[in-house]
Every structure is written in C-alpha cells, then in structure tokens.
Image (cartoon, rainbow, N blue to C red; front, side, top):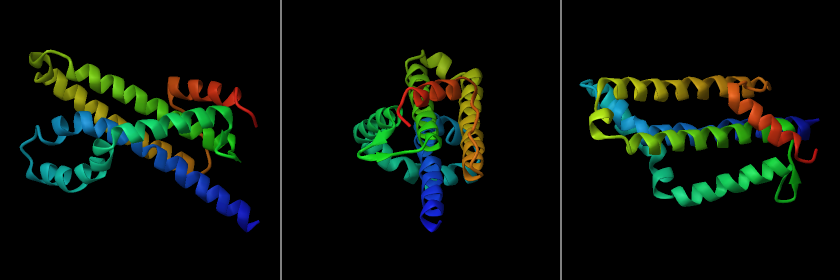
Length: 170
C-alpha cells in the first residue's frame, strides 16, 4: 500500500512540475512586457527576483529542454518511459503540458516577428498581460486538479492529449 501511495504522490508531483515548462515559456516571451512595462517598482523587483531565476536554466539550455520534452512526449504517447510503464493520468498531464508549451512557443515567436509598431501598442500590452495571466491561472488550475487526482480540462489541448494517450499501450 505504501508503494502505491508513493507512486501516486510522485506521479502527481511530476505531472504538476511538467506545467513549469509552458509557464516559463510564456514568461520568457511575455514576462518582460508584462513586468518591465509597468512603472511599479514592486512588479519589476518581483520579476527580477523570482521570474528571471526560474527561467534562467530554461533560457540557457533551451535545446536540452526541447530534447527532453520531445522524449517525454513520445514516451508518454507510446505508454513507456525508458523501461517503465506509466499510467494514463501521468501520460495525459505530461502531454498536455508539452502541447501547451508548443502553443506558447508558437505564439511567442509569432509575436516577436510582428512589426514594432504593433508590438509596442496598447493592444499588444493587453494581449501580453492576458496571455501571461491566463497561463498563470491555467497553471494553478491544472496543479490543483492534478493534486486532487483529477484530469484538468483545457478545451482543445485535452482532446489532443486524450487522443495521444488512447493510441499508446496500457
């Protein structure tokens, strides 16, 4: 019984930690616009003390992180990581986190290639704030559901993750 409980706790913790990647991805692209675009010294200090150190490893080793995420995605889609079979709950949450990261990357890169006039507009600031805060809310929503052992439901992402989990072995 203890082994099952430990496995469940470990599974949930790793599933929650996987949502770190989409959060950091959005923080790298939109964090400076959200936190440094304000006059508030508290917001700037918070960004410098907490968000930048969280994203430092991710920025410095983005290729390594990308390789690990692809490995996790393919392993979870197949149902096996290394030689271990993993549960559908774990696979579903990891795949959701990787898909959110991919979407965040696509939006961030697209945003960077927009004309400067648009990127510095009031609309772009509102979009950046909405995206950053939305990802933060999504992170907490997903973490809370995972901690309670429930599947977080994110409209299109959950369906895609469910399809990938169903085609794997289990």
